[in-house]
Image (cartoon, rainbow, N blue to C red; front, side, top):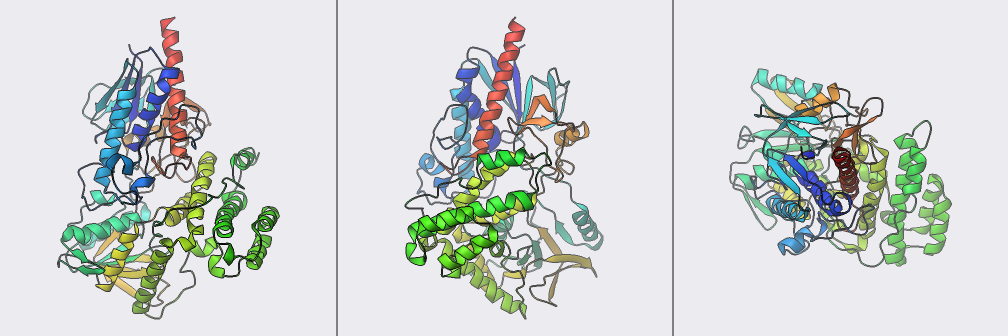
Length: 584
């Protein structure tokens, strides 16, 4: 029988893996036959998230020029670099366009078709528009991948799980709220992909509590306003009359920072500087392991500070009181308290200093006497963020963004470092387009969007849901509908995906935060004894090798591309050895 590779998931990650197989096959697998089976109920390329069958109102949260599926010489990989167009080059769009998701799906479909066309003769791709239900088979033999609606399994010499984001069973709190909603005729929408949520139960004019202020909320806001016939006339929202009234809060109580609206000119910060491969190797070599807050965060803090001040001193020297060479020398040798003293002496304006704790929790300790005062203050916060993120006078912010990408490339190698970092990264680096925040302001002025505050709590009593926040002491708002505007947590135990849950039941290892453990070298699935499975790999956000995304900004190292390349090369080398053994 011909060798067979089954890839479960044909979205961006599965497509990226296929591109790397095509790039590496001439070196590692020339002249041999191979069947590649892609298993996904959604079309190859875009998959579920980027499929064509969704509202054209939903945008990407990246500029078209910042989206690529192709490697470049900044990616640390063993295979060949195969450059290709960014989204804006492919679609002939202005670089700073925020394209809709359907267009990105078309780009991904083209990348998929190009990858298939680039495969050597003898390698054939088959798409199975079904769900994979389970994988069985011995560690040393062929695997069986069972598909929904098929009595016989696909036989596979290797299996790669590229499942993407997963649906999840509710946690204990969500289950209790859902049960209360059913018992009292309320509406509770659990964490979900907003494009897939049934929003018809949210009625015109009714109050809706929303917990979550990230990108899922932005999608919800769009679908419940423009999606219901409203429109914007400049900075004014003209309602259709079909909109509900949204009351939104979260842990931070503010929306994610706007995407930066200018380009970097001049020198990029030379990264990594204080948190690179050597520091990561040292952390991994510690006999007793490492603690994120004690051992890793100080390196992250110093690296991001270096990026910020390098840019400030080199691009805006008039706002500094010391020569860069002296600052850099003293910064390199200083611990955290000494760095704070150095910055205070060298950077006169506190607004030019980097304060990551204040950035992370802008409403900590903030109290307002009334809900109306909070609305005014939050509108001012959003307006200030929009101004700053579109003003190159604050270009150290963009340097910090580049520092975040550099840091993420190192953190990927450390495995599961807990959920806090991923939320912090998304808050600073993966926020909405500026126009979405301007729409948020218009909706607030129109009375269709109200801010609840930080550390929002939700209780269910007296036949309603009630939300409160210490930001406005003593105030609460009640409603008969509650939306959890966030993605499901990617835990193995609570994933609704039967394949992943069965893998866990059979002995696949999970991290303390519930992510599937994989070998950082090539993505092989680890068992609870730490042994890599010779025939099973996994890539994506449900693993402890998760990255900022399956596609990335050009010339930023692309950790996902590095992983795809390593997995593709390991798979091709295994299949080549297997083919040679059979031939002998």
